[in-house]
Each structure stands twice: as structure tokens, then as C-alpha cells.
Image 1 (cartoon, one colour):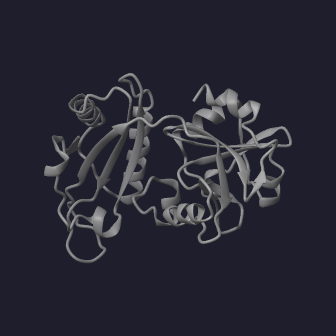
Image 2: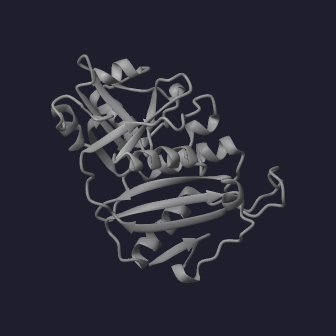
Image 3: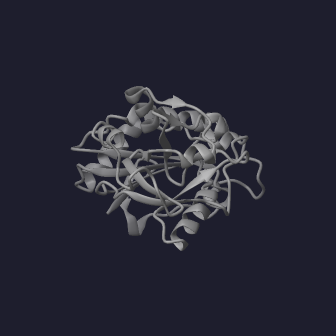
Length: 266
């Protein structure tokens, strides 16, 4: 497989990133995961828009225009002969001197990788993570920051418990997200999802579901979650039904009708 670094497509074995790169030393950067199907990435501009928003939060300038980045992605897909792919676009601040203060004139590192698009995920049995919580007060909760350790800890906890994924609460103890996606719950006949102010990432697929199903952004307590008749997760690669939480079936323990209908549209 080949990868693209700063617009240059090279073999993975030849790839090199400076060990002083702040993406490696300080998680100073952002990323996007983009689905490509039959050679098309219909949500590419939305992902690049969110990438720019994340860069603005970090004060990280990126001179490469969106069209250039889109061309780099296309070149890499062609080089790897992939028409259905998961694309990872990573932008770091690049090399910096020792210390945490960013360089005044950074030279960002842009890395693009591709892998075959995975099949639709099986229905998930999840836990509510106890080892960590999402900080809804941090501006990084609203961007795809490279700092994903809370999510890693939550997913490790899920794996140790024999679960497929973890739901994450925020510091107030209300629902925020899954370890790798947004969460929706059908509660008392209404499709709800946590608002961004509760620590939810402004997901691209999340926005699609809100528009498609007229889902409501509302704080979801643990008691409300326990009453949910359907729950599902969304991210750039699709929708995943949740059929059990902490060992208790959601609804009848199978993907619900609303979940199935939405799953055919996103």
C-alpha cells in the first residue's frame, strides 16, 4: 500500500515523519475519516469543512486548499487501486522546538492513508464507560483532535468486559457519545441525540440523521437511556445498531425498525 505525505505518494515502507513532529509528541493536530464508495466521497467537502474548523480552534494554518487535498486523496486512491475505501486525513502542526508553545510559523504535516472499506458493523453490545468521562467544557470535544486517549481507555474497558464498544458520559454524568461515533436513542417515541454542548462531536453522519429523521438534540440522562427502545451509533463509515447496554437488552434485543430504516439512508 502507498500513502501520501504532503502531496507526495510513496510506499508505506519508505514513509517517514520527523520524530519531533508535534502530532507525535503532543497530539497537536486534527484528523478526519472519510468514506469512499464506488470512487465517490459525497461527504468530502463536509469533512474538509470540519477539518478547517478544527484547525481554526487550534490556530493551525494550512495553506493547501481543499481542491488540492481532494486531488491528493484521488491520486492515492488510484495508486492503491481502491474504489471503496476508508480514507484517514491527518494534519499536524509539524516540527516544533521543545516545549508546548507552538512555533510562530509552523509547517504542517499532512498525511493521507487508505484502507479497504470495512463491511457494515454487526449489532453491538456496549457498556457505559466508568474509567473516564468526556470533558464537554473543552473546545477539543467539538473537533476531531488527535488526542483520543479517553476514547482509547473507554474502548479498552469495553473490550475487557467482552463488549463491542463503550458509551461515554460527560462530567455531568449525562450521555455524550460512543468511543468512535455519535449516539442516538429512541425514547418515548422521540429520536434523541446529545447536543454538542454535552460533549457530542458535531458528526457529519449525525447531521444527516438529524435532518433525515428530525432527531432532537436533547440531554440524555442515564435513566432516560435505560428507557430507550432503540439505540444506534453513527460515524463516517455508517450506522451500527446497539442491542444491549451493560448486559441489558435494548428493546427486544434486536435492531429496531427506525434504526433499520435510517441505516438504509446514511
